[in-house]
Image 1 (spheres, rainbow, N blue to C red):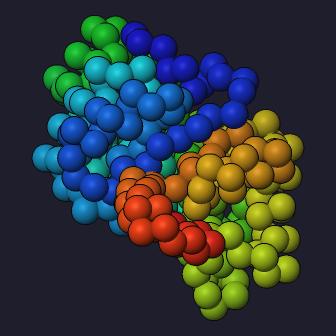
Image 2: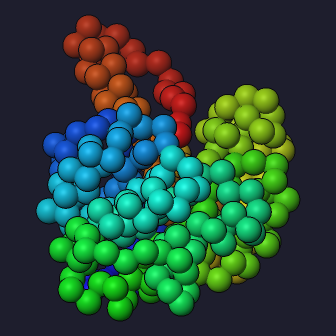
Image 3: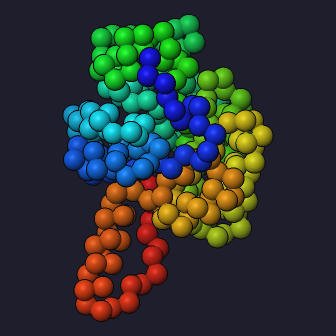
Length: 260
């Protein structure tokens, strides 16, 4: 089976994020040096058919293809793995039972409940994919609610869960009443530090969405091992505004984009 380099990597993982349903955009992103690129089915405008073509495009690049599913639904998780995703980011995980359901959907028996069938995953992963997929597929549970924070230790204790990924907008909305990916509210700062410290203490992967490369670099310095420096929509918006402002001789405003 094709080895998942994210499972072996000891350096920080830089993760691209795609919300626009385009195989061409996916192919471009895959050649920009990202360690992984995530196809977003939750807040992106992407259905299964588009996601399949995007995963196919990513397969022609050096990056590792991931998918954020729309919700913790085993059928969708299994389908995206069959389509060739080498890792799943699952939103709104609130307790250990939900984390266990998520992990089970990503693992063949006897470790889980994933159904086996002829799928594109064998083309991308190799003919021996079924024998090794349980060890190679990356599983990240999103922490973005009061319940997720309260049950963090139990979630991290779920066998087969590789780590957690902070959804900062939803977490900020939950804790402060305002969605802000780079919130400096004390409650938000404390929550992020708690998730980071507890996750690293469990020797699992700590990830977070960021609004820029600069913000991602700060998160790496803080100790995060997987960072997403904005998504394609945010990057396109910023680049276009910068080009227009430069052409007009204007000064660009301070960037404060939202995230997913």
